[in-house]
Length: 330
Ligand code: 3EB
Image (cartoon, rainbow, N blue to C red; front, side):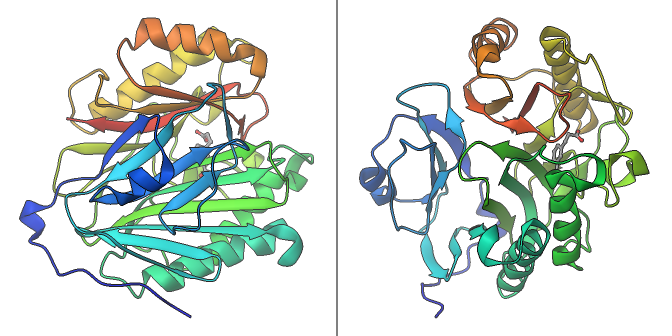
């Protein structure tokens, strides 16, 4: 059964992008704040809540206790759920998430397909039907060789399940491997009642044009998305990929440097001023636990003042050690 409530239309001119922040927070109190669209806890130790706006992300944070991620809008928020799909909406924005167990849905390909079919079917019923940004967290992402790698299976199922979901163009996205229950697939998204503007990175081949060596089904995402109604860039998972090739195998510092160069290239491509600041929260996904302090130190020195959440996650190419995504607010 679909449950939830609707909000009055607001003037698109008055719309502001959701504000994204990390903070030490208590779930119930934060959900009770007006305008809370989504709240994320990270890892096993994160609290549980049945509120559809709350998601316990399967990725472990390197900080203990870990901060939460909060999305806030300047409007009343309604929310509901429909089986495994949970959503909230307010001010022209829509948050939707789905969590599925691959054992219950016929394996990784069928589960990715089902997740995207269900999200598509739901979003199509909403005013906020323009999907701007998607996060995909799956288990054992690099397990299996060549075309049998689980990430490739995920790409196959995602492409089948999305159908014409993204006919206007792919959203910005992240796909990362978590270390929780390997059968657990989490997909969540941000959509809006206005379309965004896709941004590609001139230093990189667009992912949907990757050559065959990266799998049967090229990954379906844009490198970044400029949100409508405000100068905000949602940045996809960005790693040390140049052209279509992974650069600097086994060299963490060089991969971080290349990743920063790619992030700056995206800002330039979006027509934004260079640099990240205190209002530009980023996430760094780090493959090896032992690398976390080095990643932290690097980002602290190169991006001083930038809020960074360090998460233990596997990048979808096994040679990549680190990936960064996030937000840049003008
Ligand atoms: C890359 O640049 C790294 O499959 O949705 C980054 C962001 C990557 C999103 C996805 C994959 C995805 O190709 C991998």
